[in-house]
Image (cartoon, rainbow, N blue to C red; front, top):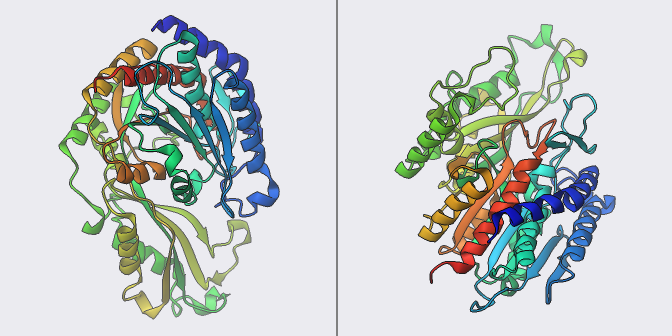
Length: 477
């Protein structure tokens, strides 16, 4: 392999064809179905699928027997399946690689800087701003860039299946149906490459070793049928907000943020502790500078390795939404009848999400203060995932790919987010090797305002995947 030619090919393809198409993709408000229940009628999802399909179809036209198909099961979001046959001697068509990404997006979110917006692509130097470019509209382009770079040099590779779903930001609840529907086509991959993860910095190739799961639901506290004058009711009618606050304290120590019940904790594997310490040494005090801190706000601990473990292996509670509280400008002298809080518990990679959600429900609803009506409306949780040990060939491949593309060895760290497909595949294919990587690094702010794709990292990840695919073909049996 001529590394410089791989780099030149990917660089040219990205500048001439990938980035212009990603720019058009960002313009499309194809929100995930959880945020746009009328997605089918609005047609934005189909627009995004058509854009990506058209680009891919043109790029694979010269590859004999390459296939691209759009699959639409009734009532479900579509998926794109691209099949690139093996290239080179001595490999069977069932020894395949599965490359994964998604094209649905999070909602708009407020707070975008002047001149920027979720559906307004803006390139500033190395950054392409807009919703979904990094999370992770680039994935299909990155996967095909890698394969096309190998083909251009006539470097052998195994059969590659590129699967792009449209429901990931809603928990991938449609994906199991497609995995079953396409099982004969997908086969049992010997390698899975996922391009939907993060990176600790933009100077290394980062491998994700674990993903947290989620337990989600809505806490509903009701004390009256309607609001009444606070001068009349306060001191008599208990505050629904105060009750909700007290119930949350059953889950979380409000002083430290630590989750109290043992239902949500596991022992952290020594290997993951070691990885956290190595990542902390590598990143130093810049590890969490990417967050848009206000003033002198401090992190929850001084030890960077402990913060990494908090983010990747320890449960943490977030209140992500509320109902029953009017905006301050509309708030009168009223004792409110109810408080609703949307709760998201990030749980360790090895805890079952259904059991965690049931534990949340029992803890929050038993013996309600003042006999208030307390309900917990559970939503579908998502299991986390912990990577199997890397095969020696893959460990060596990632090391050499990191050196060739970033000029430094690859780095490893768990991620605090969830990729539902990884847990699904990990259970289905326990012998499969996984490469989980991505471009969501410092400041990229996926799901929030001012999300951006760091363009050089996108290019380098594409080059690194080409190296891994070539090494996968050449690995010892």
